[in-house]
Image (cartoon, rainbow, N blue to C red; front, side, top):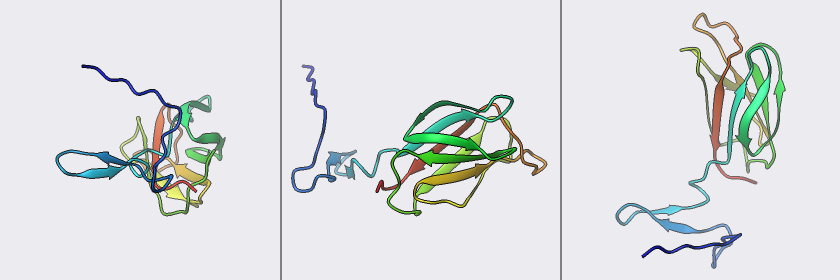
Length: 129
């Protein structure tokens, strides 16, 4: 038997932002805590472009190997998890000047020099404001 649920909005009954999902075994997961809040795939080499993204209002080229991610919806604070990587170099990424509405990522080549790349990916987890 196949069931299908079609809704536009899911909201917790006791608290709007609190929906619990049954996980593996007896474990439970808070749905909102388990969702990625920001992600982006972008290019900084030759042509600067946002290939695809979620919750990114814009990206700003700040020089070789430097990009500023501007969020559509701000994070609740600056205590969020940020993972960024490049497809071209073994030495990549550092994060500076993190705010609730922006994150700045730097990419470096294997010689520790700032470098633009053909594909970068970033994922941010945490609480939205």
